[in-house]
Amino acid sequence: MILLISLYLFTLGLVLGSFYNVVGLRVPMKQSIVKPRSSCPKCKHVLSAGELVPVGSYIIQKGKCRSCKAPISPLYPLMELLTGVLFAISPLLIGWSSELLFAYALISLLVIVTVSDLAYMLIPDKILIVFAGIFLVLMLFLDSLNPIDSLLGAIVGFALLLLIALVSKGGMGGGDIKLFAVLGLALGVKLTLLALFFSVFYGAVIGIILMAAGVVKKKQPVPFGPFIALGALTSYYFGASIVQWYFGVLL
Image (cartoon, rainbow, N blue to C red):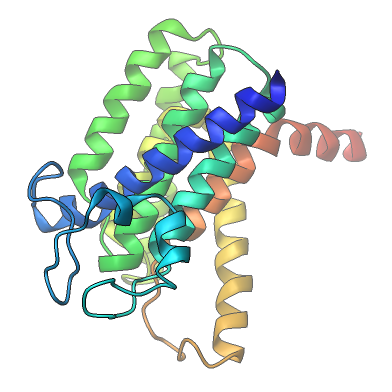
């Protein structure tokens, strides 16, 4: 039974991940997420239902447009697969409860901003406003969310990223700052601080690897949104255990 439910959640995540790709690519360009239908960026071939199957169509078409054979960005299946996996494992990590609504909202936000930031190095205000509203509504129904802690988390998240941006003289974008304010609202003070630590850690480690591999040049701008997403997910799923372990070691 659990396996069937996990499979269902994985499939749901794949489908929503495909939609989140559309949102992340169209909203920054001020385009409708409903019309026109998805098409090949190069030849404008309108994709059929068979060409829109999450992950599967990419594999069947060998990563190329069926019409013009232009390469399809691996970002699409990667984000679909990632969303599916996160949807499926969330109940295993946090249990079967109403908390899953919050987890899926957080995953949805982070997938969309990752797509947007990777594609355009931009995190749209519209997306952040919508999800800030969603988290505020969830706050009314979930006992796990403390309004005062959430408010302080939003202030701390915004202030810390703004300070980093000022000290680094533009090393942090405005979208990153506002994203951390929304994450602070969702995670509260402690988990927001932990999310920032992991975001910087992932950014530093992966950045060094990319530079060593010659993928990124020194001082080349790199989108920070994906690292924030990784840091926020690590903090959300494992933060409480990490904090408990840390203070256990100190005491």
